[in-house]
Amino acid sequence: MSSPHLQTYSERAKKHSNKAAKALLEIIEEKKSNLSVSVDVTKSKDFLDIIEAVGPHVCLIKTHIDVLEDFDATVIDRLQELSEKHNFLIFEDRKFADIGSTVVLQYSKGIYKIADWAHITNAHAVPGPSIITGLASVGLPKDRGLILLAEMSSKGALTTGSYTEDAVRMARARRDFVIGFIAQHRMEGIAASDTDNIAEEDFLVLAPGVGLDATGDAMGQQYRTPEQVVFESGCDVIIVGRGIYGKGENVDRTEVVKQAQRYQAAGWEAYKKRVQRT
Amino acid sequence: MSSPHLQTYSERAKKHSNKAAKALLEIIEEKKSNLSVSVDVTKSKDFLDIIEAVGPHVCLIKTHIDVLEDFDATVIDRLQELSEKHNFLIFEDRKFADIGSTVVLQYSKGIYKIADWAHITNAHAVPGPSIITGLASVGLPKDRGLILLAEMSSKGALTTGSYTEDAVRMARARRDFVIGFIAQHRMEGIAASDTDNIAEEDFLVLAPGVGLDATGDAMGQQYRTPEQVVFESGCDVIIVGRGIYGKGENVDRTEVVKQAQRYQAAGWEAYKKRVQRT
Image (cartoon, rainbow over all chains, first blue to last red; front, top):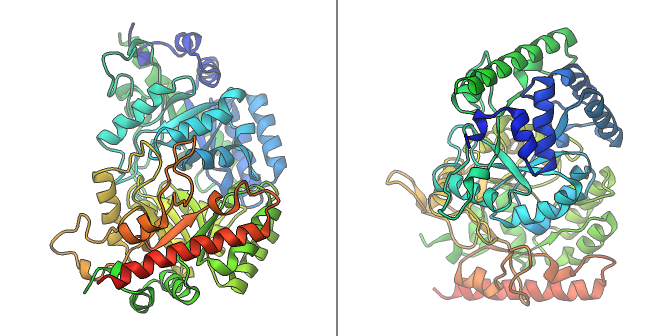
């Protein structure tokens, strides 16, 4: 069995046991898009305008729902309508990072009720396995998937060495719910023991910090190209934000669509090159 | 100069340069309470009832504002009124864990506008120094303080070895804003270099997982007593939740007050024993 990233998305979709992961892989193949747009804006109108524009070109919309200043429940209704209309999944980038009993509340309760609408969310591994146990108790009954942060692309991140290995071990122990990683390279087989059945592992790798034009920002974020993350490093989904919608205020729809298509094409080209090289 | 935890809270208050830290130390001394109550409930009425009951007995109220199902802006108004009436600070346990540009938005924007009302918030060190840079750009102009998570008390937490050391180095580099740690022991001098002026370090240590009756829960949380965390380990503030208000629904005010007084007394007794032993 070849490594997951040398198989096609549709081959992997057929084999994946988690429903959110399976759906994401199917959408990627169907829309020929491994592009996720990270919509980090503070006004609901800009938020929905950008999603409406990029919707046809993405497999996944990544949200920070808690930065919307004029949030109300209708934003979620509209987001879900767009998800169905344009066939993309929703990934709330909550970066849960608390103990089990707290993340249960944060995921299911409060104003946002993230588990009710986000097909995928993510968590840091730092609290240990209880964070997965807690989130899975809410998410699995709703067919949700969890992404773990095994690496971060910001300068001086502490996700190094044994940290990454421990995160992968935690994921491997809960493959029913943990569908992959926020990372910059493949994670299968990392820190595996002789008794782990790694041949069946297929962790989706979602790569943030992707840009075609910029190399870094003042807050320590570093950028890599779709070619680098998908072809060279074997990542599955490229996450792009400002590179597509700039400041994100009163966006020029035509320009946003143009940039989304540009990243979609670059990500897909890198994927085709990857699966054809064997 | 003796280690900070062998000095009195009021001695330390006089020397601390961060205004939120100074205020917290003053309140602790004035109210003879190093007790923080963690109010993890999902209904605003329960939330405010508990805070009203424990207010006179605490130095700090720890919130997870995002688990309140019926949150609206009046909850913050009422919380601030209680903070002034009973003289306690507010600590939003947000556990920020994203890159600089994102935490700026999460801290200042959105529905919650945490920076406007939380004297203290916290962050994981895992993204590297950019998380502190980002939060400080919002919080320092408002005289806020930041707590870093250098350890977690949940089973299998990845905050071990070099992780904790790196977190302390990050804090040391930003002592104007980072006022201490969520941890189980003192942090001064950890991973210091010859050129660091550690004699002036005074990191407040806030200890979660404190209980007088329980030893653990099903989600991996482990408990220690006030005597263990304050006297033996030198922590400054004990954080107690369910031990004080149980399930937190339709609470029996008399019982909550009784438990708060019990923890207040235990925490203060452990502190007096600590500063008198030298």
